Amino acid sequence: MLAEQHRYAQSLKQLEKAERVIPLGAQTVSKSRLTLPPGIAPLYATRAEGCKIWDVDGNEYIDLVAGLAAVNIGYGDKEIGDAVITQVPNGVTISLAHPIEEEVAQLIVDLVPSAEMVRFGKNGSDATSAAIRVARGYTGRDHVIVCGYHGWHDWYIGTAPTRNLGVPLDVAALAHSVPFNDLDAMEAELKKNPTAAIIMEVMTLEWPQEGYLEGVRELATRYGALLVFDEMVTGFRFANGGAQEYFGVTPDLSTFGKGMANGYPLSAIVGRREYMLVLEKAFFTGTFGGELLSLTAAKTVLERIKNTDVISRISAKGEKLTSLVNEVIDAAGAGELVSLQGHPAWMFLVWNPEIGEQLADLKILFMQEMSKRGVLMIATHNVMDAHDDEDLEKIARAYAETLPIILEAHRLGDAHSRLDAEVGDLGPRVR
Image (cartoon, rainbow, N blue to C red; front, top):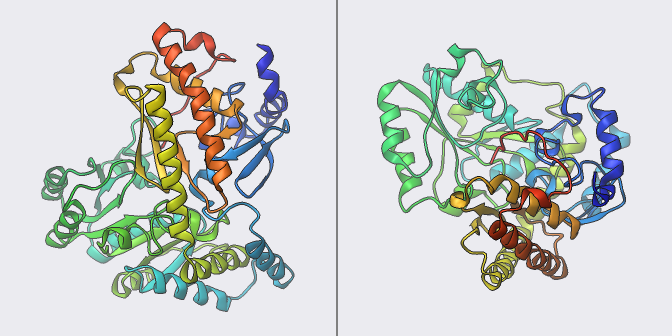
């Protein structure tokens, strides 16, 4: 173990203790050693504030992970925190429904083009699974087409060969994955089976080609499938009404989460009334669906989104960061290795796949060197309103110091030897 690893001494000790009682030592794969290699990056944090996070070793970082894009305003926002604290003595999970359920639902209806009715869950997989149940219940069909990542439940994860352990083959056979921006592939699947739903992420790193989303909308209507937009990340990040507002295409159902409550655990399935009323018979329920602290946070967040320019500010900050980093990439001559792709509020660092066998080590080396320079980043710029100009400039400087190391390692072929720890098996990334 090299001296630099002592930067993460407490993270390594905490991992050892946690793995005695928690598989992988963390509750979320993207926060575990399968994503953050021990000795290379921090694993455990004690607190977060604004756009900063502090690990258990006391190291400070500008956070570009943002709670896996769940935090769009910033950590510890006073208005949100004060509202939640005010609610605490009045109950968290109580024995009757509460008026705030309708209040938050109405805010979503006011903002989101596809929303006429709303039901709440706690995480993204709750909402996407509910959408598929609604589509199957409404259409009487079993098959679904998937395009993107839609959570951990059997109906979807059976399509992922590296993550489908424990999924019955008969269940997996009902979902069919198609590539983004390929209408021909989507229609070919629609022709094979009576399809209940097309569920898709509206955008990740790749922009929809001209007419693509409109084409998907037309295909869904023509073949009698419900169109579901999975807006877990794009919702309340791309535009006030999500990517469907941004691109001007309205689905039948949509799913939201993450930034809806600035990191409080809440998700939602929304859609046209005739489809949503299926949930009066199809079973989708949970003790914590009406949990009051998350709904209070969501009410505060959504009122701010409705009444201020916070979402456009996030995009503007993302545009500035993209511009700064692109300047660094150009100045370093690193354009043949890496590029930025996606929407400014959710920008991906994309590596040239032709790099070859060094690619995995170069990605880890990048994470290692950015972490040393006080930037917590996995693969995306998940910009928050709390990032200010100074933060964005510090991130760009970290890139400016890191990329020459990456370029030299690539040129000399010694990326692996530059790692501060031996890296075990890493899990397949969601992205």
